[in-house]
Image (cartoon, rainbow, N blue to C red; front, top):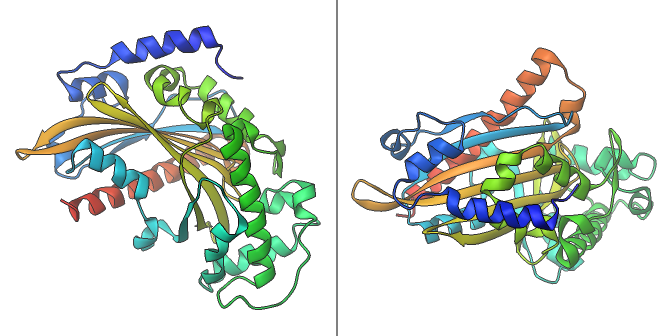
Length: 339
């Protein structure tokens, strides 16, 4: 359910006055769950991470993290936008490529160079069974039926027919996002039945009023409100031993003397349905040099959470939080190599 325009305008105003100009650490402490955040420790490489407020959305989860990168804000934004997880083996991302403003199947031909490993082979097998079970790779029945098979080699870990199929599917879904943001994304079959990415994104936001308030400027100017134009990437990655592909878009806007960004993963063939990553960037000084304090909030919709209760759900949430910390530490590592 989308925020009414009147409330959105109110939130935008509240957000514009919520941040102070003098003390980024106080802003972080006041806005986040990290009441004791310390810039000296963050500047030394500490990454704070914690569960966000509980949701009534059974497949939703929120995680917050905070860290510092030793780059000024403009370069920190560029680092996050251009971050290449394939350089970090622990993140288990096999391929990443840019999505052009006018997506076509040719933009995804890099899938032909996928490595040959167990995860990629599992992804190929799941694709081949998609016509009979679209939910296995989170496709609509109509999309799944367009897979015609074929055993030709591609030169990489995926058969040529699988590469051609996913190049076409990903191009179509990227085109939909470019035309109208996440609300324009077509539905697909998941473990919980038919999933509509726009509805899951709206539900995640409705369960996180703090995010709606603090990040109203970027929410209003992103694909969450129908604005599709953005820098995007596709990935081929591992999900618990199975391969999956995803599409994401990165939006950013200036806020006071810093900035906000939203990295919206609007399609994934496995592991989760929607992932919304929000960033607040504050300018700070560390060791006499310009640096950036970062507050990150991740909202995820995943079938794994809806199937778990009690300690198992807590454990799954903790695993997701550790993954966010690994991601943040890799970003810090790349920043350290660039200043």
